[in-house]
Length: 279
Ligand SMILES: [Zn+2]
Image 1: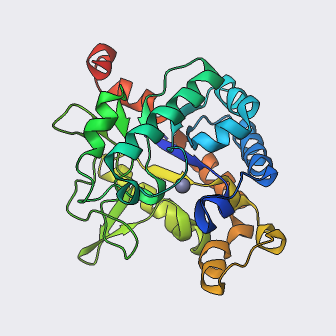
Image 2 (image 1 turned 90 degrees about the horizontal axis):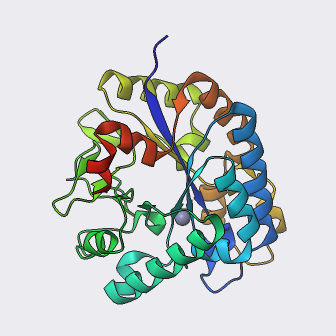
């Protein structure tokens, strides 16, 4: 059957450092999980957009180079994983520049896209998009057009669109059901619900003419991580972040068999002549 090309995006980071304590060092486990995911993508011949944290590139430059060499798009996930609303414009710009320099040194290729840690671009950070544009980036993929306790901008468009300053916005996928929007393509939804729900969500997006933007973290394929973390992890966090991990590799394999994926930058280039996109 003729298929729409969707976008698979991976936020490349280390669970304890990104979630428990920003001052922790990157662990080898983060690299091991990334290698496992890279193997899986290779087996399915799928190329993704990798939003790589600057600290990860600093710790594992050869692995980032390998990811780029295999055709994955290397984009930035900032440097330290501190939320955008918490660090302010000045430090945001610094972290962005630092992460882009680290990534470009690994790959020799220009970084085109950005995703905020925990989707932390909000109504309180209106300066973020201009800073991204001034840094020469082509797109942002930080907006979750949904309202949740932790993140989300429910009033934003669900479709890929161009912001007033010329930056593309590539929102995370949501579907509308029962009078509200639901985040459907990643995180806890992918881990906890049966795969059939994700498949139905992608079919629904296809029917709307909207390619899906799916997101995932390498550590979500690691069911044994919590048994080995040498730090205290509150039980609520352990549950919300750990449950369902054992099912992720199989679900992802099925998803990659059922649908077609390409990196975000390639999708944007297909929307209109490349010269216009990169202008
Ligand atoms: Zn992240």
